[in-house]
Image 1 (tube, chains in turn orange, cyan):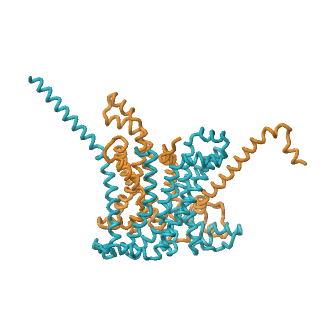
Image 2: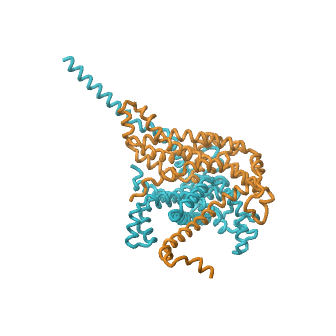
Image 3: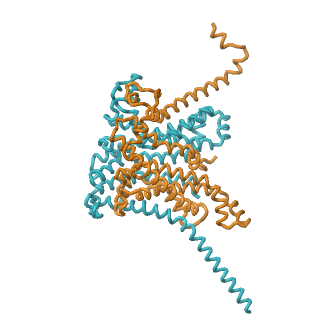
Length: 295
Length: 317
């Protein structure tokens, strides 16, 4: 009886509100589905971070503890005290920063050529740039190893840096070219009419306008170089010369069951990338789709 | 007279100067391209050539030291093509790629469509979650999944045991290659969905609203609108995403390699792992190169599709 009184306020209202409430119900349903998707997607990340903060005995329990009720940073200090952690951090920082700077300069020059000049072989170069991104790295490991061995560049950071450049450059050139094309030619021309030199127009007009492109590209290069595993794994043998990802992978094989410090180490390795990624993801996604859909 | 000669000289010199400037202008793009082209050329073109050359050679440990392989014609290819294991590996890699790519594309697109249906707050939350997953480095993801499917304390076994869907207490996922590869497929699809979803969602936002409204007014049902209006418009994006996914998934290496402690059983060999094993573990670099060449040939098809679509969409002009 009480339920009837609850759902029947006035005789007119249901007729008006039913379609709207059905719509709202449907939307609530979709929101619920989205919540489920969100939980499934985020769970592994959550599980990593929450395990990292749990004390050892809570991790090794047959009934999982869903939330770290007694959080500890012990796992993080354990992870940081692992052999070669700081070596790996230093190597990763060196490799990453050199790759970012070099790829930015080289890619910007090449992108300038592709966006601002019409020349013979331009389209061929674009096809190469796009095609090169498709070359399977895993297949090239063998000849790359032999080439670098001949040049005495195996087990050196410099060798790895050059290899990373090759795989970062195509995408960097492509992205920067897109940003440069977005700058209207008239802006530069009017600056030159107003008395700027070509170089002056470049510094005052072009550079500030492609600034976001440069930021996006350098962060992309950062992420690529930071996350790369296969090349570093094959080419850097000495533990002191390995990068963080190789350190993390060998951590696994040495003490596979020590989950707390492992998850803490994984969290630390992922942290810089996650921060940078949240900053630029919009631009990267947009760069690929811009102009691809024509109404 | 003198003034005429002088003016002619002036014109000629100006013309010369002009043409020199034009020459400089013509050379500029090549000079700008040169450094990037040199790096790509030296580090990709030469190894690619070396790969093909080595695939026709007997190249062992001694060759690694002397830098010389012994020319044996197509013997490496004959050897792998007559090797039953090679065909198993090819079949496994193709099937694995097909499963991963179709799951990634279907689920990724479904979540992109879902993003259109939900409220603003939920949309921001879900997009942020996707970006977070996208940002997780592969090796980190491998470690996390390894922990989740741990046979003793893994949260996956506990959950499945609680749901009473089978005996999952101390269940070893990697004892059986089917469930093991299933774990790898889940890991790869989980990591690949964000890129597909966010790209498709960005493309969906560019579909003209009038077209969808017109179709709705004409009485088309939502599914029909999706199939007849949205899908054809998004086809270029789907072609690009699918070919990229094929290329990424076909060369799967690090997930399997790291999760199985760099010693995967032969049941887990994909083409990349098989080539790596032949070269670096049993020092048959020539055989490894031949396998890698076959792999490149497979992927070349996907690359062609991708390139054709990129050229067609007018991105290249």
